[in-house]
Length: 266
Image (cartoon, rainbow, N blue to C red):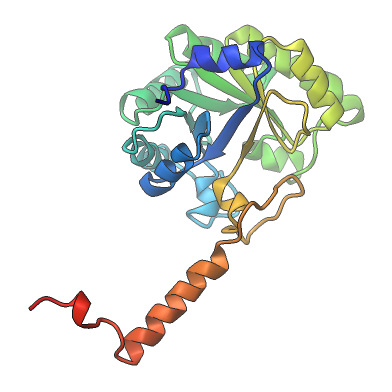
């Protein structure tokens, strides 16, 4: 029988050279499906703002919205480790706000860890939150909440940026993060960081040499038409199946074929 995945289990996977699998989920039914598929970590990402709510960026997502999604996923009782994204401005304003909001995500949402974006600039937050026994996953490189500073979704860590990204990686590890997401950086840099750090690296658009990989569930199923990043692999294309089912339903209702006798009560 599959055991519950914990922080020590994730750390041991790095030590044993086992690749870590991460996918997003934002609601009860998708969380059940993702968990049944055997992933190690379910990330309730603020990407919900894009793939679920239809925003162009993750910036509008609120704490209340994230708590709703995290609680929905928690009800599926996943065996995977449940990690929740901290939305923009929920942890940047002060240590007190960061600890309070991360605590809410654990206490009210049922998350088992939180994820924050930023490197050296946010290490003090990681240190404070970790010190009150809330596990923190860091996120460096291309950080979507910093989209305006970066001028868009652009690859980070090339040329003169590489040293800064490496410094960020060591900063979050030293601050107490149990893992770090590496997004949108060259594969060679990601390989170097993964070899140097003692905590697991989770790549997204960072090549094949990270300790694990994360993707958005809507992307791998062909359900998001807003963006199609180079690093995404589509494992299924279920949008046409859904449209076909809806079209069949519409046709059967209009021609009187549904509901039939077997769908009715006597």
